[in-house]
Image 1 (cartoon, one colour):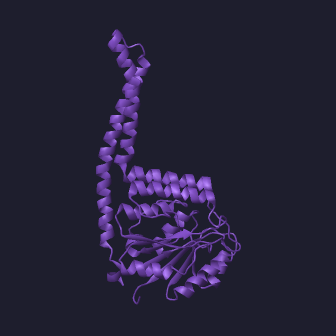
Image 2 (tube, one colour; image 1 turned 120 degrees about the vertical axis):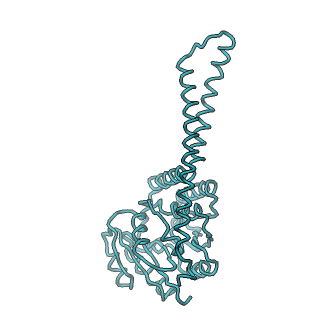
Length: 310
């Protein structure tokens, strides 16, 4: 693909010798690409190994993968970006196919999902969490991706330069996915083998801590990007609970003309008011969100496509 500038972006932290292999593999399969390694406060020889292997090494002092990705997207200028973890778990062989697909079909993201039978490579807790979180995003945002939390993606310049990254940690993958589907970007998904980590590298993902952060990020994005759904569900719950509490009171009042449980009556009234207030918030914020989405879409369209930029 003459004229198309490719940048490989590798966020890393204490990857040991694995980072050198990752850099060499990309130099082999993508000889014209520039490989950028952004070190996130490593305490081992990651930076030395990456530089020795021929990478452009830079640093990001704010801890967390999301902070590193935000810095890489801001600093590096290219037509096509390959975002991949530096732990040597992702195979490089299908990268060129993903790039060709992105360019030929004028896509904005090609997600490279993980395929493995190794329990050590993809732990059961991680696999289950990925499945459930991916299902939630599929349901709410009409996502087509089966492996939403993959750390291996090929992205267009339009995507990268219109991405308002807010995540700090591993929730960055969920934010990348939702950004693509929120703006109705053309995307595709390929699958490649996923293997155990290389020598000197260990998983930084903590199943419960990082899983809860990813889930919380999805909840926040639903509130911000689908406010009518978020506040509508809250309104329905409040109203249903209010009606459930009020029915016995109405029955008693119809029979005796008395309201014997004033605290319950006050609670039922408060819940109904809260339901209407939540519904109003959803309606107002839905209008605001639509305006924000239009602005993001216009900024995205203001950036040249790959064929025009190359």
